[in-house]
Image 1: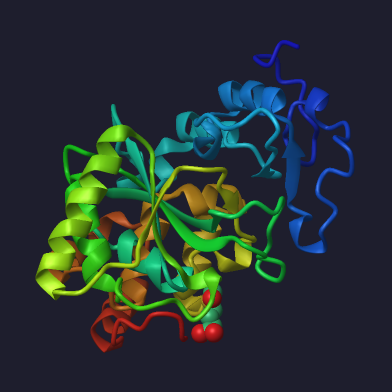
Image 2: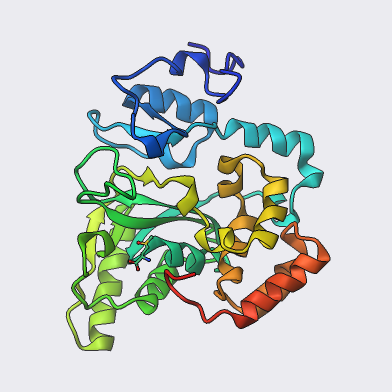
Length: 304
Ligand code: MHO
């Protein structure tokens, strides 16, 4: 199949060859915006669609859910309409890296990392279990997880680890497997840094750290209502970003959206917010509203 040709389905944009069913292709009512792929299909799709989640290796038997709108549209849109995008989303990066963490409820965790300098994209999902196709309602043995793409020239993995350990209680037993503290390492170097950080945290807290250290597995993207949860609770702000990114996949891929999701929840540093405020794609009144939310919010985890 020539994936460079735009032989794509009108509605979803996936190449038509990938539209045919693989067994039931999901079937969960919450995954209607997802399409299920086998490994070889995913690899082809990955090359074509530049999907960040699947640029990893995984066992041949595993399948993965991808959003039903492919990211190559973003590439097209960036070329065609670059000037209409928020300035922060027009930046380009040579060498982004991925970090995957679990630190309790993923709503707050995504906002926490999204507001951090050097973090370029965030998304939430499920990882660490064996049950196929988890969803929020049938999470089974998976853990709520946040995945972060970061620019290592601006923020290092050890710094992300330091923030990870500072932001939750890594010595407590989780109230459910769903909220287990875990680091999913993507390379031997990340594994070593994580081990060092666990040791340093144990020395600092004088307690045993219960954080699980797990090789990066399949990551199942959560349903869109869980992505950028904090932002979705503030309609006046959310709707301006939705106007720029009417497509949910594009919305979730935006740095501006990741940042605003963090700032609206009170996360991040005021200096960075002031520096970035004009680059987030928001009108002047909504910039002021964002600032007001930032100053008023107590940096809550999961609640509204
Ligand atoms: N509010 C829920 C957690 C939601 S979360 C995405 C609770 O605290 O039980 O797990």
